[in-house]
Length: 543
Image (cartoon, rainbow, N blue to C red; front, top):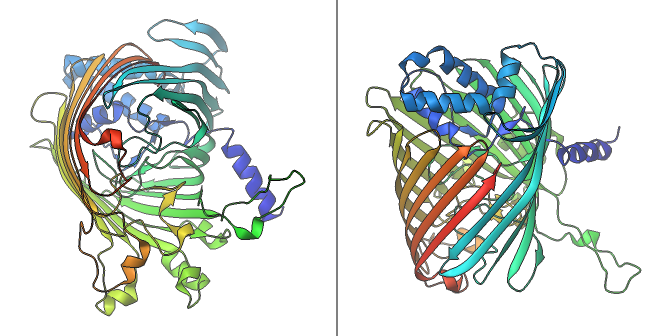
């Protein structure tokens, strides 16, 4: 079968189904719960890569069930709630006898529209509904989301998932670009005077075995440490399709690889076409891709070390980047010529965390090196296109309370490249930290789980940013200093409260105060400048 036909089939499947044998969204409360259980020494949980598939999360829940005698009442209530939420996966892990069963409108312990399961096949379906309203930068805003989610398992090794929802934001202050915020960017499908619409699909299919999996996906990926932003790979940019491979041959080693298909937003003049209808010309974008792999080492229960690299390349698919263990930078030299712009844009990264169980405290750090050139380093050249995060979190203040303190700095020109189609971005948004380059941020916060139904968060931050760089400036001498050019400053406070009376219904209250100044024109929307408030209330089902 020709390569183009094979890739067409892969991309078609990507838009139909999802799994890393059913992943669980990366901002779910269960991750903090499992981290607190790791601090207690009850499980060996590794959180450098998210989302984590639901079968793995269910295995942690099952492990905690065997040691629940030492859990507090709140921890036990949370464990019971997660047991209900992950019941399909626990049924598979425990190899329960599954006589064919189907049911509509399930209300026992949780709400679900429909479920069916048997020995060989399961299918679950739910609507996705959300209505959010309030004051956004001192003006009214309404956010409506609606859609559906289906998923399940086939046999012992196959899983699938499809999640679709349509969104509309309407109000006087609309943040269409969502630049320099922690909110994920969106691809707008329709614009009106006081509203805009966008949709989102996560989907895929996966095959897994005892120590690995291979899957075709369209979803977000998060890699690296950080409570207030991910330096290496985050969910800031719009989601994209990818082929993924995970392998854990030993309890001290894990390998992760994916090859993704990105949007370059760079027109390809070779594809310009006149059409039979006047004015209906067409042009395609320059194809853009990313290959990414990492090795994670766990030499002790207290230390996690991840080392990896990525490369963004364009124009055409290079089969060498489908070899999961190849050194991408060396492969880039093999493919390239003396013309540097003909090659890819490579990065390397390191992520580490150390747990002090006596103090119930974790220290973590990430390092991201862009524009890597070993020859330049050996000649004493510049290596300032780097970013790093360092922080710590502790659970020893109060039971089920997390406190974190974190600092991130991203030097000028990180995530950038002299070739527009090889920038570390998707659909115009950087795939790393949401503050982007030439900026830093210090943040700290508290998250408290009061009960299985009620949680709260309190966050503070101070964010500085220099000018939006021009790529050509990276190649001038003297090299620009950190935070050079026009300045942007932001101070912020955020309070969140979530009440979940029954799975999967949530009621959220969110308050944000910001004080923003920016001397660069048009970088920050006018309505955001100065001292402003956001207060939103959200009622959601399956969000």
